[in-house]
Length: 70
Image (cartoon, rainbow, N blue to C red; front, side):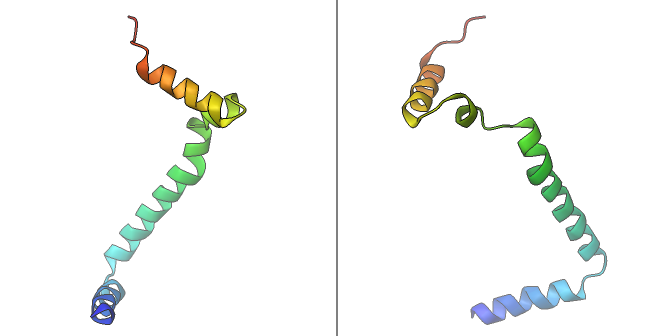
């Protein structure tokens, strides 16, 4: 059963022409987003600003329970 499902998708992908190019573009865009943009624009704030796990936990609880003041 699993072999038939695998072969179905394998043969379908092998027969694609334009689809291969589109999948390549999608994979390149995902690689750029996760390998380049994520570390640059979304640094690990908790890891870099707090030394141990307890400080991180306290900060998250404080941020989640403190009401926002406008």
